Length: 127
Image 1 (cartoon, rainbow, N blue to C red):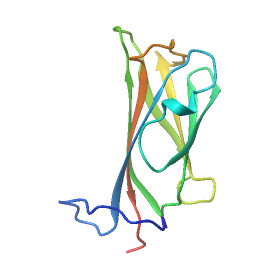
Image 2 (cartoon, helix red, strand yellow; image 1 turned 120 degrees about the horizontal axis):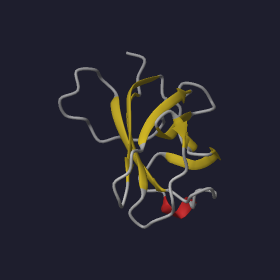
Image 3 (cartoon, rainbow, N blue to C red; image 1 turned 60 degrees about the horizontal axis):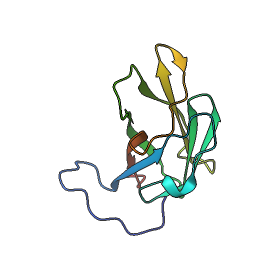
């Protein structure tokens, strides 16, 4: 369970529900520029291979309720973001996101308007 103070999420039926909004710039086939990461609660984002990233969270959460990833692109392209493996309830505290063109993991060029956006809804309580 994350040991920090969160603002209450209005309208949540479950107690202890938190949201994390995370965003980072794409960098073609290179490592993610850690200064491009926006949002709190994220320790780092690592490019694993073509179009595949691991998001390392700062805290452990008992449950991942939902995750939505989107590709923000400067020009129209057939790229979608897919959320993969999640280990938020273990000390690994990570989520994998892959950018896909068709079913193929694909790097996206570095551009001031090319980003990956990730919205996480997590339960911070065992109740």
